Length: 124
Image (cartoon, rainbow, N blue to C red; front, side, top):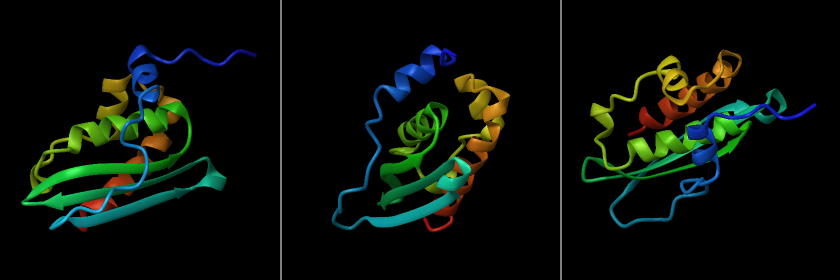
């Protein structure tokens, strides 16, 4: 059986996971970390946000999951950088699924992403 074709946006994000990994230490920045999910259940996500001068200076993530999971993490990381943590308007998993054309069957994975991101943001 062949793999399902992913939407072009998902393929583009998945092929360039520039924000995957651990953050580098930065002078004067505060680190906010949030995790959710379990590998045994198919999805685990960890976000690390470096916050300095009232802005998200850097976002890094580590994720175990399908291409939709990793692509959504990458899109969120790109969206969050440079913004104020208290003024984020990133929507919710339903919004993300619609924007990135994530199938409804993968919505549970986006909920794990949301939990990890919210955990990090509550520390910011």
